[in-house]
Image (cartoon, rainbow, N blue to C red):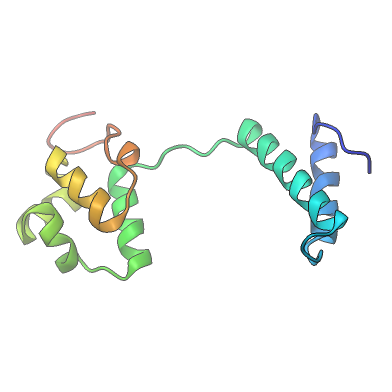
Length: 125
């Protein structure tokens, strides 16, 4: 396959097949370089045609807690206590700037996710 931009779904599928065939390419080889280039082309196509939306802040907190093995008890320190963390997770209370900073620092949740408007019982964002 000649290297060229991915313009159609058929082009994309062809690139994916070739990428799969190159998975075991040895480092510092022409095949490995080709794999890198094809992967970059596929990523660009995917970014354009299959964009991923920024997740809801509360869903992101729950995801990060699950992946790090945190319980609600672990979250209490970031959100100001057991009652406050329960209120945030149940959407009864919105995140404050200080909570966002702590969640970013402690869980590594990107601030751009946490500052997104979201539905809560406190406000209708």
